[in-house]
Length: 193
Image (cartoon, rainbow, N blue to C red; front, side, top):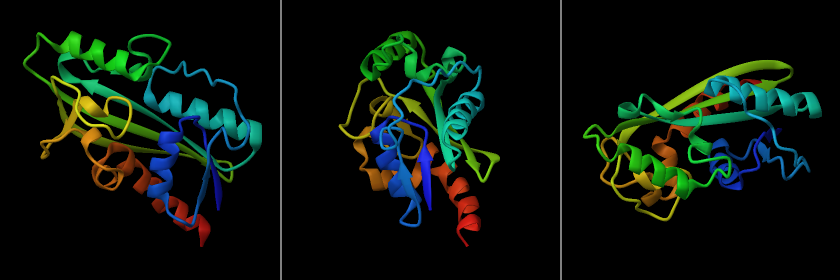
């Protein structure tokens, strides 16, 4: 089954294709030739995921899904949250975002944080939402060369390495995105039978 992922982020496409398995062909917005920016102006992760999925579904009438992920840092009143991708500005630069977060968190002892991913799936015209969470702590320095976004400064509970120090297979066993996608895949398997 072919399904469109409402994202231009090829790192995410690679990660999700590894999760979703051979029964589904995941196509990015780049692959379908959709290059317009989708304005994510929702107040919640759920709202932004639905905005993206509905935009692509209305344009293509094809099965599609979108995700929105936020990093919620306890000491910063759950910032950056829904603004995680553009925390340091509209340029959406991961290094700038991490630097600002580390600066804002510097005076706090509490480094507790969690990643939350919400997926909006539209299949055969029906809408579904799935959520996954990963609890951990923010580090004081960036470590690792894998992953993307805030991965170099996030250590999951029970680990002593950052998400960016894990290879994709290891990360996919525990990640917030993987947990949300497991729920989505369970539903998708009922459609492919």
